[in-house]
Length: 362
Image (cartoon, rainbow, N blue to C red; front, side, top):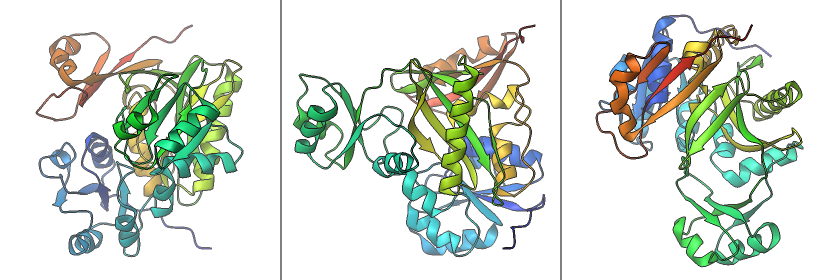
């Protein structure tokens, strides 16, 4: 079987999605000599479009616009895993799309995602699919009563979720997530939450980033610490799990895997995302190769970069009005500020992040 050739600098990468992850990928691509053309319904003056060579503003179902976009680029990747699968399949008939529609079909759907991991023998929290309030009540009886109801699709950063307890009304919880197909997950007694981002090229070469520890606030990632303070055996298992999932899915690009660490040091998969991830932003200042450059390398089938940690680091998200602290952050020694070019600071909106490097222990 002939392996895909490396895509040379000067080529154009198509980006599906116009948010900050696309923006930071485009900046990394430019440093390597690539152009980025962004496609999204909201691409106009978006964080990504502000730094791209070209942009197309069109709906995900606009086939004429999609065909023109495919003809203008050499490879396509994405910064959001909820791009409609038919859109990706249509493009993939015309230009390589990395990752492809098959990967999205699994990672867009929480039930499919959990089922996929479990078929590989990879542990998750106990879960049940739910298509109505009766299913929620049954799941609470079987795996609860403390559990969480999540919409099967599109929920992120705490959206589309309802926490359930012994006194919760299944019907009210079902209504709270929009009355859509959902999943009920049992609570996990975990020591901490970690994540691993693994890069995989079209030829199958893989490289995982170091394991990091994540802390959330109001359902949104607040801080990431690199490296995670977990035993070496736990870190090795987390990387093994991430690589096994990337290999089985056939990911071309990046796969981020969020996991719970159990009190005994084991890991349970929580969620997967086939794109750059918020918990990888620390790599921009504290890793030999940042996650965004690694995505460019992977989708262009270039040699994957080193993932050695330059210095221990902590990433802090700037949510909503947190961004107003930018003057004091700029004055802070050792702080590296990254702003996303968004003009309106709304509650819960990611406006930027700051990486703080720490001296390595001697």
